[in-house]
Image 1 (tube, rainbow, N blue to C red):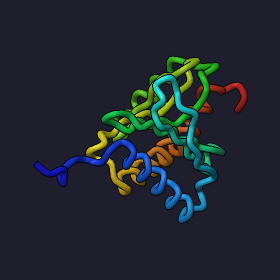
Image 2: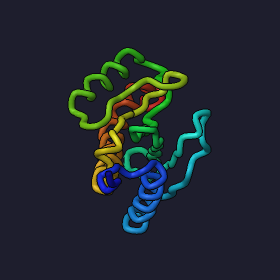
Image 3: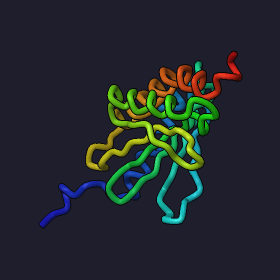
Length: 155
């Protein structure tokens, strides 16, 4: 039996993701930083990509390479100070139009966009799609969410 049809190893995925991210950064001025994150308790490889936004000053996307999936998340805004239920309802209603990501409540009730991709579907084009989608989702939803979550600051 040969190993010609074996999927890439985690080390090969890790090497590819690093190379793809740096290639994207070299070609796109929206990329402000790409770095490896400190491994968490599980010591899974992590990267963060920081993008320059228009509506939101900076958009940071975290990628975590697991045994079978690439998980990703982007921080959208802190816990709402006002209109809490309406902010979360708006985010949930927006989930209906998102592909490959969903709004989720994270630590300290902050709002995140999260998603997961099986490693068997991971390639350069898919990673590019994820970054582009998360960027667009944050940019298109941030203004309405922030104005609702901190309405008195915009009065």
